[in-house]
Length: 309
Image 1 (cartoon, rainbow, N blue to C red):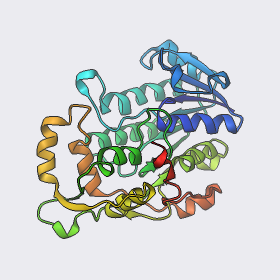
Image 2 (image 1 turned 90 degrees about the vertical axis):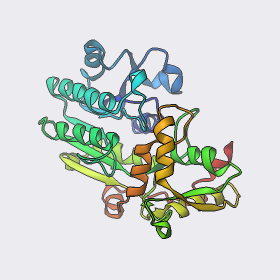
Image 3 (image 1 turned 180 degrees about the vertical axis):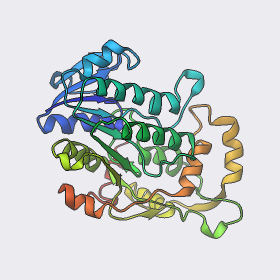
Image 4 (image 1 turned 45 degrees about the vertical axis):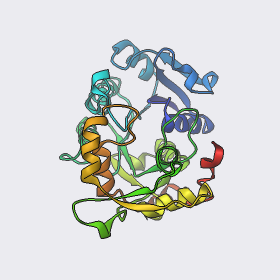
């Protein structure tokens, strides 16, 4: 099948590319000039060099395809550099959806996120807007909402566990157990449902091959949820380290983030703290069975890639 993909050079995108090729799909990828070196299998991909806000580039990418995957997303924004949730999550998605509709694309697959909502953080709100626009477009759609995605990153890709390793676990200071207000006894108790990147890619690709997944929204998570303390512990064990942890009031951290989260060197933003404390859980047990996918657990063994550096 001919598949167009937007957002193929990042952590998730590279796995989607590899899985598409492995399953014998013919891939058309819009890639910015100079970014071709971010992927290894360029000989197996129809690369369209250009910008997503260029109509000609968009048309060349999707015109021969029956399926479109929109996977463009960021985990933090830098508006002063033109990098914003509003632009990448919603405005560009809207533009691609409109083009897909004009070309009578059979199936549109959207990468969203677990926990999206209208009145949430900028990240959550713009993901929600993209979902709603797609649902009202008249296209056959499938929306995936992953929880925390983990797995071996390629090159300089951003991945949650490696970032946690580098900005927290490896430092010679205790890891923070975040809590809000005076709820110190709930420090680090918020939970997430980690899902392996290979499983996420499998869900995407298998949805291409079966129309029963049309007009569906799927929350993707692992078979088990882990609280913050357990996540830090598992990563530490994978690194063969023992990590001390201490309660940390988020109010103080948010004050510091107010001044510094606009800078790339600062490890966490106010929005990220807010979403962490909300938790991010879902159970995809039935989905794994329905899609015939074997889940990869968030275990010390599956985190062994963290010892590579």
